[in-house]
Length: 294
Image (tube, rainbow, N blue to C red; front, side, top):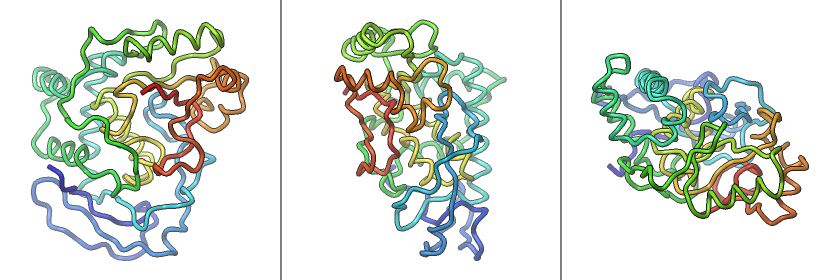
């Protein structure tokens, strides 16, 4: 499925002051299409600076407002889509609780379907939710204003257990080889004030994180993609990882991390090759905490 079910609109629904174009609900919920105007694009919509990998329900105040160069229009879920959206989020939340936080980082889509179908506490994914997830995964990211590469092309892509290692006291995994070696060198050279804050993320984990980010901005998928790669586009799926300063909390996922001694030490030692530098062409905010491996 290469065609997106998500049509373009403008900023967050609560700021919409004119009538949306209504669409018939058939199968997956139909999109709302609203022309973008200069006035609506100037509306400030906050995005939390806190990474949802650590704070899944992301409702904290933010110093980040609308990105300065919004795309000409934005993709916003309509009321009917939000019903399915929330249903999918709730089911993935139940799945995460059932399999455990660490296992959820590396669970495959096929495994997720089997667990959901076999456990009444999770519940099988109905067709409308499957269609929603497939449409989200196969949507062309540039329609959301994200211009990075798609590094995982199959929804069913799986992570082999023999290729990964769980990092103690973190709840996260890293790939054996370059990713693990890099992390160990960082810990050795910088010290134990550096911690792994996010490692491998399967497609399922990235979908869940992206949905939670979108929920924090009222179903605005374009704003969500400004601070979190859409499903299939995260380099966490193939090797990259995030680090932070022990005890620094949510500031590890903000530009403030770049002012820490830990970041400066990483830079001085040559460990930092920032995937998303300031004013990058990918439509993503600055991420000094993101260690580029691949």
